[in-house]
Length: 199
Image 1: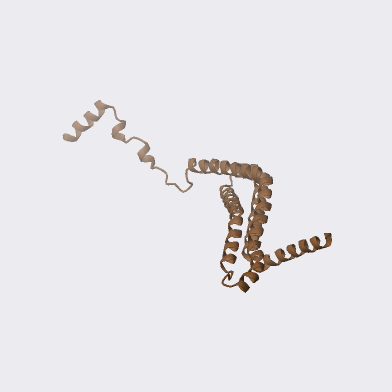
Image 2 (image 1 turned 90 degrees about the vertical axis):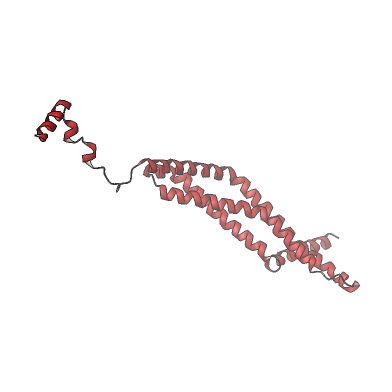
């Protein structure tokens, strides 16, 4: 009895493992994409933790903006993929069930094997959603703090850049800054100059 159950369990896992490479390949592709997004997020947040003070001292706006956008976009994609795994699984199950032939008795008896194949995609969707959700729970607080820090630094550096005048800005003419000779003259002297011009 124990050996039979063990054999059924091994058969279940071998069929499930086989399905991820055949009918459920798109769930495996989504899992690889999620893992790549997570790797980029972890790399970017490590850079923020180690180099944030350095970027602030150097006022490195360009690299701060680059890391901030990389961190936010990768983390958003990672979270989105986690929520899509159950939907990918349901899609696979529904499409497999719609493909079953239930038109005759013989078809119905052969369709029993198709039910297992239909449910493998839902199983993989749940497995990957749970695994990546646990990973996200471990790193989420730290990642969100680093997104906040890099965003604050980006705003600060952008404000500093806006306050500084550009180096190639045209200088105002000095003639506009200094009053003309006529404005410099006292009023009685100006009148005397006008009288002499009339003569």
